Amino acid sequence: DAKTTQPPSMDCAEGRAANLPCNHSTISGNEYVYWYRQIHSQGPQYIIHGLKNNETNEMASLIITEDRKSSTLILPHATLRDTAVYYCIVRVAWPDQGGKLIFGQGTELSVKP
Amino acid sequence: DTGVSQNPRHKITKRGQNVTFRCDPISEHNRLYWYRQTLGQGPEFLTYFQNEAQLEKSRLLSDRFSAERPKGSFSTLEIQRTEQGDSAMYLCASSYSSSSSYNEQFFGPGTRLTVL
Image 1 (cartoon, chains in turn blue, red):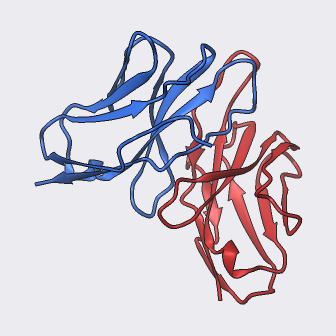
Image 2 (cartoon, rainbow over the protein chains, first blue to last red; image 1 turned 60 degrees about the vertical axis):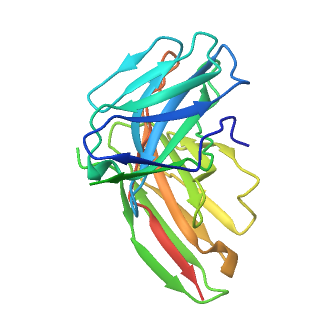
Image 3 (cartoon, rainbow over the protein chains, first blue to last red; image 1 turned 90 degrees about the vertical axis):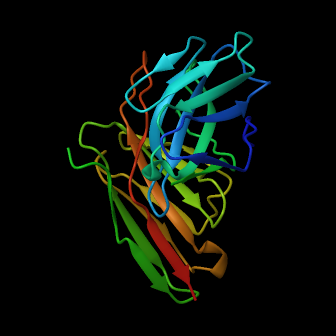
């Protein structure tokens, strides 16, 4: 079973920041938080991951709370092409357990003009 | 780098027939994963390979399912005696991982199976 909880859906206005929350209250010290998204009829796409520090890349920022029990994915200027299902996934980093991803239901983000 | 490719993209078959799907991972990736996704659900892990060795199989992978990666490059997923419940999107992903690092998985576009 997935170890994360996400709202089923969210709306965001085009050009505004999209803030997608994720609860992972049972996360262990050796687990990373990963975010993937899936645009309709495509395979999932990696966005970002982090352990305990905030992370930023060209796609998004990831803010992890100090107790690591929740995180927020931020898309700073959402566009219509960001409309997708966003998955927050907790994955064991060590020892190596193969790296399989356990997906939950995700958050369906709709970016509206 | 052409990404992960899967063939065919769509397959329609009749109940009881056998089907085989192919996945070509990114060339230097040593790990290959298979997932299944039904409508409205997130992908579910089925199995994974490190090089040619199949290291884990989900209990979702019944005896009718078999996966191979004979030379550590492309992989095939075969479903024998298909059932209507096998209708789903079958996703393949690959990654490069070593003893000291994980890297993200890159997914293919999937093969959509419809069993009539």
